[in-house]
Picture 1: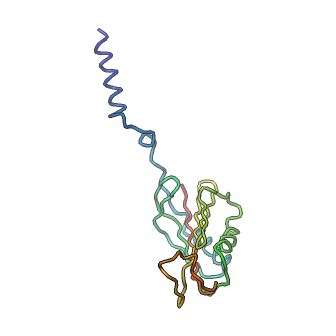
Picture 2: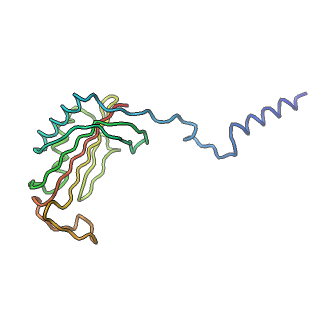
Picture 3: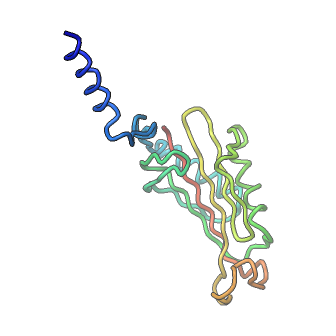
Length: 170
């Protein structure tokens, strides 16, 4: 009477494997939800970033998706924008913001560089900080929309610099 036992094993295998399209991603648990750091700490980071970059920074809370693992939640969202700055490249602002996260570990998986922007990531315990620096033509400056922004020939002072920092806890 082993036939019912074999049928049960085969049926269990078919159910476990479905149509044979089961993959490891569907078997893994979803990424942990993220939440912002406490508001007082967020404001402290905004003040530190403002001091580092030299122009006004504002703290708020916003939706955030971690592009590394797809987890979603809310972040401490810090923004700062200014034109009339003597900055030639995004790397100059990245270096200034990096000082705020000096005791955090650099996360190269969250880094990207280009002529009109840079991204940088930092990790400390269960916290992640994602920094995005970019520029666009500032007030009164025009660039062709038919060419890459990097080809725009404007003075550094004509660039509108944007700094965005998102800090989350997992």
